[in-house]
Amino acid sequence: MKHPLFDLVSQLESLWLDPETSDIIALSKLLEERQAILTLIQNAETSGLDLRTREALAGRIKAVRDRDEQLLAAVRKRCDKILEALEGVVHVRTAVRGYKPSEGEFPHHLERIA
Image (cartoon, rainbow, N blue to C red; front, side, top):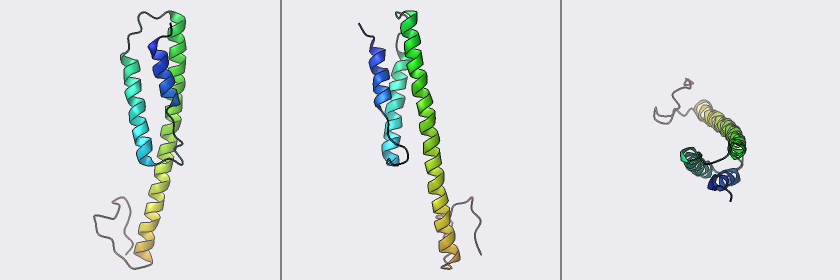
């Protein structure tokens, strides 16, 4: 009989979206689902499993974690691109149109163009 943990790991492996093209909200929900499954896996009773089964599960979980690291790096890269684009828009509005954004809409880490 296959242990239920294998089903959880399979479910975890199937949850994936392309971080470059997917909606940020969908990615956020995906990460929440993945975390819920990881919590179930971490809290599962494994004392009845033989060594080979534990090693097989550990290998699959490591692969999932490596994939999560790739996902995190891709999401961070995408967020950086969005921030760069936003900073460019703020500078263009300020410099070209003479528009002075209010303190609330101007990113605090940018310098104002006088």
